[in-house]
Length: 249
Image (tube, rainbow, N blue to C red; front, side, top):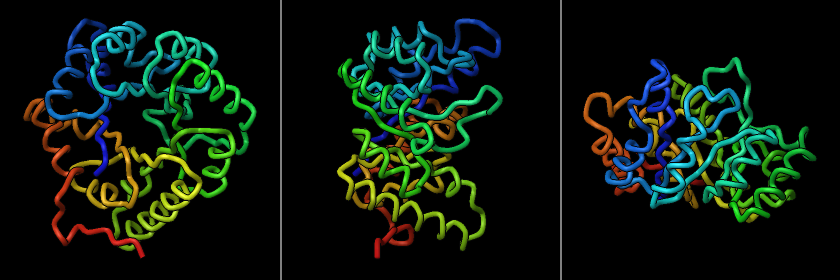
């Protein structure tokens, strides 16, 4: 069964809306752990729109499960990661004008820079995952550059509304997941996953880790964070009803 990484960026987004001290993502991480989270994920963006340097430092000191730092291939952020040493760094693309990450990292066209960042992070003892679209050349490049894991971008699957398109996107993810495993990489997935669409992704063969944030924090507004995490953990862990079964052909 997959591990559940809970992304707490949106707790920090709420805090930064008023530039105050609450709600504190450090407290959120503790509650997520109580709810059964196997990991805590944060994204230290270059513009510091939500998570701040202070959050990363304190979370490194207090989180008792896996700490996963999403980050751009920016020298400043690589320096910070190398110093703080999260358990895992997930390299993602980053644009200042985007609301959230809009697609996977382009490893093929930025091969040299990604290779340099992977090497620096691994020298610091940090496991490296790459956030990629479900595209074969990107996955192959990730393996060739020595990444430890690939997190498949599930955004197009999450956005699909018609059943045929959703099935097509799911099949693309299945094929990409198989390629990730065949290339000897650990399989992760995330982006846009929620309580309604997560089960087919959780059921994919070899799925090791799911990173989910917005839907959990949104649910937490109404039921509290610990319960929201526990409910998602139950979904990704199974047993699953037959009508949600995802069968690999």
